[in-house]
Image (cartoon, rainbow, N blue to C red; front, side):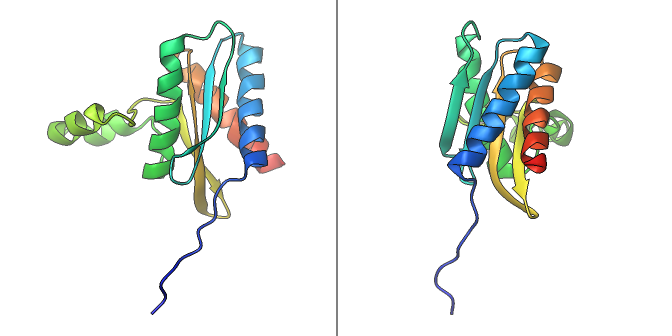
Length: 141
């Protein structure tokens, strides 16, 4: 019987690259953002808050990253997935670390989820653009 398992996780250098790429995209969009990058378990690796970014959105960036990493899926599709399951929707919405709206993306390397990124502070579409720019930068690194 195998008693342990080795699981890949995001490195700090990769987390910094992701955060900086999201920051660069936010700067291009001229939107003040909060950016969080977590490891595969949802533990924080990098957190950035642009001066002037809405402070409450900082928590949402962390929640989006956590949700994307742990559920291994973008946070955008939750409303549609759960629209016919109101009890589950209510339960997840009340979880203190879960976000059910766009701006969170799982970080996938070699087919495995190794972390998550969450971006908050702009409109939902702007948050998503910044998170996707980060993933693109990691893919091209």
